[in-house]
Image (cartoon, rainbow, N blue to C red):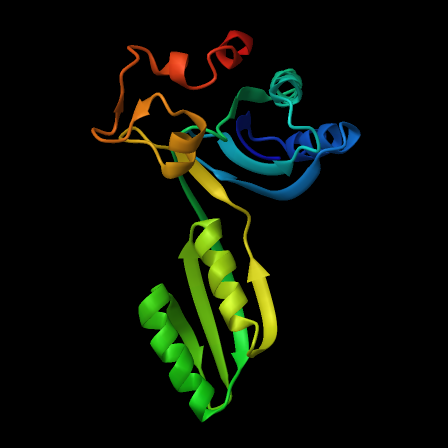
Length: 198
């Protein structure tokens, strides 16, 4: 099962290595890791997407607790089921003929991606979207000659407004008609037991 973990760390050359070592020792398959500066000076935010071979939430809780014990880690949250804004960036260089170029220009209007470079025989596309939309577009573009492809890892922030559909499926007590949960405390809705470990 896929897990999305947000980690805030102090800037340190060995911080990322320690986290990767922990993940590999615990046999989590790393799908992506994105690390960059954040809103706090001298700190960085790491967004980790891992595949947990076990469906047990206990394994995920143990992982976040172990990451929190690492040197220079300030905070860790498993945000998998929380309402998220999740994005990835993908750059694709395609070899195209005149007909294919027209098809891709039409696709750009549907999928709302940018064309950053164009020559007589190539195009470079820039797509920023949620992972599902990127996967759908990648599937459509497979019929063209892809010369190069570079995909960033996912980044995510929790929503302060309403939940996404993934959260609605996992937490049916959420009232999707008004976009609010009728529990007084959102911690009772999202990972009630998880917050005991933070």
